Structures are given as C-alpha cells and as structure tokens.
Amino acid sequence: MNSSNCPACGSHMHRNAKPMTIVYEKHDATIEMPGWYCDNCDESVHSGKDMQVSDRALTVLKASANNLLTPNAVKRIRKRLKLSQREAGRLIGGGPNAFQKYEAGDVLVSHAVNSALLLLDHDPSGLEILRARIPVAA
Image (tube, rainbow, N blue to C red; front, side, top):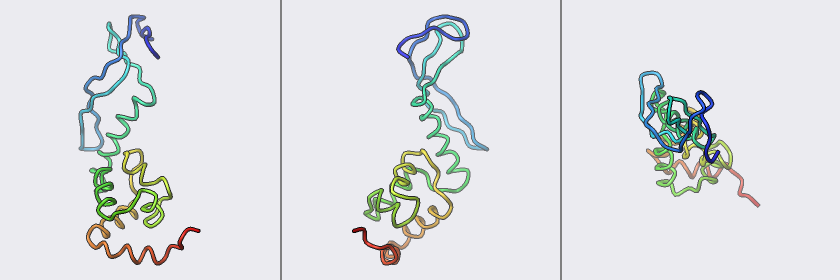
C-alpha cells in the first residue's frame, strides 16, 4: 500500500507511527505503532510487518506477566554463554531457529528453556553436561 483512501470514510490515508497502548493482564506498554492513518477519521490500516511491532511488544508483556525471560534477557544470557543462536537451540532446545525467534520477540520461551537458561546463567559449567549429551554434527 503506497497511498490509499480510507476504507471507512474514503478520505486520504498517510503513513505514520502513532502511540498505542497495549495491555496484557496488569501490564501495559505504549509503543509507536506504524501504519496507514486516515486524515479524517480514526481509521488505520496495518500490514503484517506493522503488526510485528505490537506482537513483539506483547511478547515482552507476556514474559513479564508470566515470570519468563524477556527477549533481551535471553540474548544477554546466550551471549554470556558464548553460544550462537543455532548452538543454543541445539544444546538447550527448541531447534536451530528457536533462539532467533526468542530474541526477536516472535515467540515466548517455554518454561523448560526459561529454567535451563536461568540455571546456565547461574552456573555456566552446566553447558559441558549438555555438550556431552549431544552428538557432534558430521
């Protein structure tokens, strides 16, 4: 969509980012929501890429509400352990692309991955136990 008319009133729409508050349980955050906004009424149109902004912010709220690691915390722990995203997925679980999704905020970490990361953050030597159980790729 390059430029368009409003589906509600027919007026011109323009590309912008406006403050939007999202709420999950007792947690809330205000984000700058990109989209097409009507010059005349309150209508807005959002692409899939636009919606990614609110989806990722909602993931952070859900993590906080459910006492799970946020995307930034997952990344911080993985880097502290000196693991690539692929290696973290192989050793800790979730598959080769899991940590990319966790760190982008596209997916919440499971309780099992959350617990493993917290334990490894406390005692990184646990990585050696995990490495010993995973066969080396050919």
